[in-house]
Image (cartoon, rainbow, N blue to C red; front, side, top):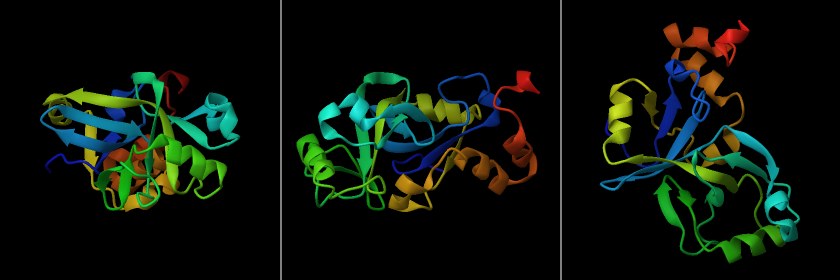
Length: 183
């Protein structure tokens, strides 16, 4: 399968011990000759949006997007008609855009957590690095069958459910402890 933006990267059980990516599901927001950018969808942080931007008075969850630039806030959304300068990922899913519009939409309660997801940091790969990691079975590349609904479908159990759905050798990992030392 060719790598393209909009696909999901599912962490192989073999990367246990990698604190950044263990049991991660990543949405690829961009992929090209410069490299790849993605956001971890299933790793909520203890922060809410109003912890980072108090004037917003919003309790939207903030997720760990990845280990790169964790002092920056990023977002994916499905409302490009409301947020100018949005960058299309695929299937009605977008990232970035005019942040002033985003803050106004949140303040005016015109978008909710089903429309947008926030991340501190992102996951990034140099050109060919992701292909190399796929070849070494670090990731499983999957189509995003949920399209723009992925924003509100992905939860803490998403990785586990993907393992169960893949069956066979993967389903056994669905109930294994996150840290095998706890076994």
